[in-house]
Length: 245
Image 1: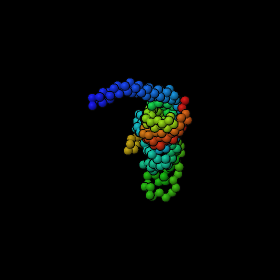
Image 2 (image 1 turned 45 degrees about the horizontal axis):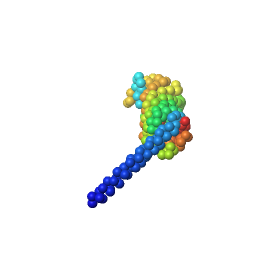
Image 3 (image 1 turned 90 degrees about the vertical axis):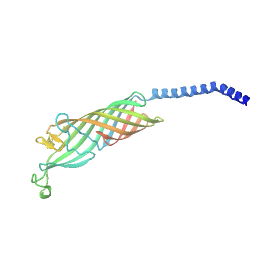
């Protein structure tokens, strides 16, 4: 039995240098691969995306809510007013241009500029404040125009899964400011008050902006097609294209 222990000990001592060497080789190979990946990734990227159901306009800097009454998560809707008017609206979605800089294959920061357009027809209901059910004559268009939402945001993105540099998963967050420009034909003649606060007849309005991308996926290497799921100024669901260089 003693001889067996001696033989096993000798075999272990003989194999130890080989085992240590193999571990070092594997570690160096892994580090080399990681280093090559870090050297080969694209540092810059520009992109364009389209989003549906954007959520814009929360609070207005300097007096009331910026976009009170604008429906969220809808592309068509109407809003009734207390003065016998109502508005028909349709939204074109969100269109965004972006630039990102990658520090490494995992982390990147950048900026984006997006536009959302809402077309509004303001109707005057015959009879003023008479209850809607009593209207007998056709409604007439009082004004027609656009609300333009221009949003500038900075963003951070983390890529947590990569496969063959062709498929990647990521999440991200962006924050900034929205400028709302309203056509004069659809501006209220005077400031009026709603449940959420005053709505003024100011042509230009500002509000904070935010976008949270819960899950994003990229397909491709240098030319990338993307889809994102989130909530905020750029929409709940986005599709787009990125070019990396």
